[in-house]
Image 1 (spheres, rainbow, N blue to C red):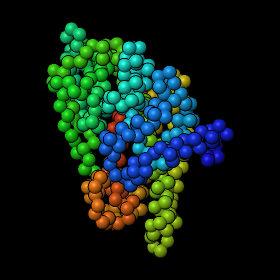
Image 2 (cartoon, rainbow, N blue to C red; image 1 turned 30 degrees about the horizontal axis):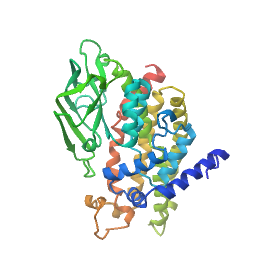
Image 3 (spheres, rainbow, N blue to C red; image 1 turned 120 degrees about the vertical axis):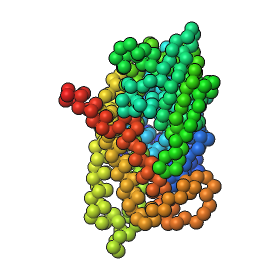
Image 4 (tube, helix red, strand yellow; image 1 turned 60 degrees about the vertical axis):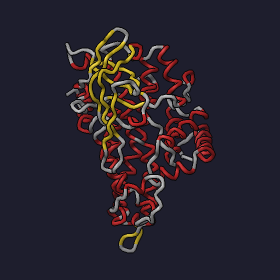
Length: 398
């Protein structure tokens, strides 16, 4: 129980904990806890379990299949799920496209796409970044030209997470080149099985092909798959990014990782004493714990503002920056806690079916992989340098 919980919140927390004990497959929790890779079937299994309980879309309204939870209930669920080592809810359909359709979609689009997001009929990925338009997202060049009842799409997207599994992709495309670059962008929903789409994997530092390049060659997309008005996609893009950047903060995941780090620091020894009693290590641990507690409070405020109909801008950028720093610091400390045991990195050890004798403690196996993978956090979702520029403009007016 959290001492800050009201009686109702404490009861809800107990309900969530009981659900996780009863319904979270031990096999999935063990994979998350030990840093092993989750496959598509693993993620779909957990989504289906949550959807059966009605707990998948935690910030959708009840009339569209969501929970209708308030900001504190969502925070409690995220925290407890992370502490139980539940797989994360993939954000692309539930936490990114869903809110966009609820705000900008037609009734027909909501009726068609929202149930399919919930029941797993469609696996979504995000088509935003391009080779020449990452942090400068408005510089995108992927074009969509109207041809009767269709748009014809040509171009390339990159860093597209889990596109290898996706049935659908929501894309920013250029529909007008005549004015400001922000004014000629539209938001399209594209079937990944369409002729003319090619997906090429990009292998990351930890050895996993988690992200991809996606190429479009004369891909025909029905006009009814346009969300909002033509050339008004930049407004939608900014709205979606606030949800993405808030999600990147990863408060619940960081809280779980911090508890795991503390447990490791109590067992690992340096100079004849537990690592957690080492003054230098303990100081870094305390600093990150204080920062995380402060970020959790800020995160609640931002989500509450969004629940009230707002679309936070500078606040979500602040969360993105701070969340990135905290998560990278935790993975760095986790790696350092194992010393030489964290140095060997055997990629195959993170896959199903690996039965070799571990080189060091079981918890050390994913230490290097987690450290390498989280280097990307300060880049994706808009680099931290770009976020600082957004904050400067929004708050200081510079």
